[in-house]
Amino acid sequence: MPSRVPKGDILIHAGDLTNAGTVSELQAQIDWLATLPHKHKIAIAGNHDTYLDPRSRTTLSAADQKPELDWKDIIYLQHSSATVKLANNRSLEFYGAPQIPACGPARFAFQYPRGQDAWTDTIPISTDVLITHPPPKYHLDLPVAMGCEHLLKETARVKPILHVFGHVHAGRSDAYGRMTGGKQVVRWDPAEEVMARAMQRIDGLFTQVLSVGAWWDVVSVVCYDVKGLLWERVWGGKCPTTLMVNAALAYEDTSELRNAVQVVDL
Image (cartoon, rainbow, N blue to C red):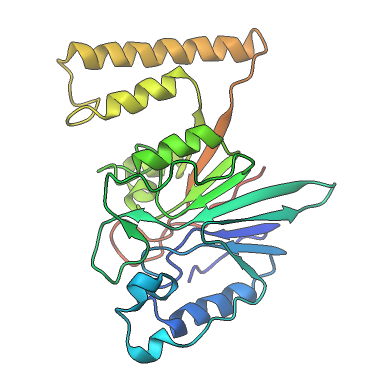
């Protein structure tokens, strides 16, 4: 558990509540979360939360398959939505989903074959805050791009204000993750489309220094970014954006909670 959890109106846990995924471990984490002072607490599952997926639950001992959980005051989202009412007559609609591209043994929860589309038309268009366990492809999921391309397309369709995820610890704690603080504002404009296409190149965009196509993509991204800035700053136009946040607390591939809790002001 993190040594310090900042105060706030809403606490979001983006999955991997446990290491072993047993009921006792899950309940202990829920009990601890319930002691925190945040008025609203929202959680989803991660691949380590074995009990929460009926498929992976069968890998637990017989005793660990039967008990039920008491979620207390925590809103648990599993392919579901919840609306939270805030001060000043504000409200936010949250949607949470745990599924990840397969990356481990049968005890890992909510896995689907990598490359399979488990996302299209699954997220309500009215979603303000999206909570998933995996990141979208090419966004805070490096150095090996473990995110999901179908989640990226679905996020682009819905365009939530905020997208919180975890799973890829290195996306938060590698050099780029440290430089960005694990946060990235994505502008849903042609530059984003070009960048996604370019990153699909073999070995990625930035390693193909002698590729004409790669350089064309670089120039295109720069041109679209300049055009977008002029559109917003000079002509007063608006482009929809999503703040993406990698909330992983674990450092790289260790179990050490060396990353600070993320704080977002909406």
